[in-house]
Image (cartoon, rainbow, N blue to C red; front, side, top):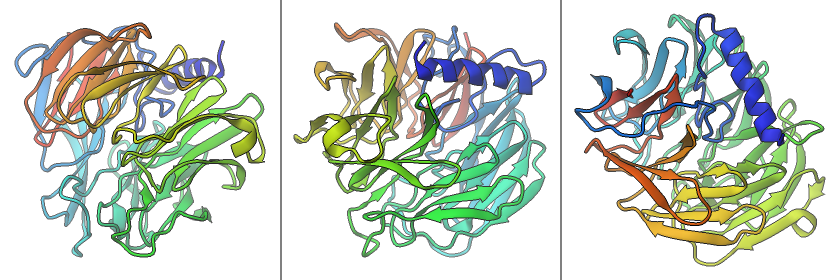
Length: 415
């Protein structure tokens, strides 16, 4: 069994064991249990609309690009006021959509961002004991599952013309964040129980010279096991880097990247795929190296003028499926980099792809979710589902249900 599938099976078992009475997979962080967009759920809705197969929907107090997370009976999402001065964490009852608790943080200073990226764009993360959120310049906050604040950490002010977007992850007793982009950057690890800073690493090329420089990473770290050790993958300006998540020390790096990254790394067995934004290159690297592996381990590099990419793809059976920002879906063979097919689905796409129940789910900003059969032979469209609401958030899948966050509502879709 491939490494990624072994890890996924383990995560599912642990998720069920840690959450008594829950027999379905949780969605504990950005892009699910492994941060790869892959769900082990064997059932998930295929068709829905605003008035079909919606178990409940609730009006959200503000916009945001963050994805909901799900643990047991809790659905947690972050929202900000329109001016960004109020940044909140909201926990809803999974069965009914009733609000269980909310915690709102006041941040009176103006924080620079793009109009398409409101405050609270980072998704929450949980391990079943605590919920951690990053509210940009307002800081990192940790709550228990009843909403009691456990600690908060001020990481300083973040300045970039497009704002922030990376989400925190939990690794053992650490909360790890790709903090930035802009003038204040770093890979920061905090103690999960106290918020104390354990390490901070900054690598060449991460920091901008000014807040409006077209440089930065909005990519969330991904942790995988290469057969010998845990490795944290980071898509950073100019290089894909692999770190020891316990210490932040670099294991290997691979050149060929541009100055801008929005997507998170993808893992296909021992092949890691990184895809830059703003028409930048895409590349694949074989894991397991040491030091600069550009010449020894890089498998392929698409350095042509690629489509803009905001959302990340998913890997299914050795193939990458991604919906580019221009609404064109690609299937790429992970090992060779060969583009096997491309198909225009429509709209403008920011959200990342997810996979469940043998299907790939692509979302565009108009609230349209395209469901395809992941075949390397052709793009086979199974369903087109419309909510007709602006969304830049990716779906979360848990317990056979899909949770969709728009700028107006949080939806629970269930057949």
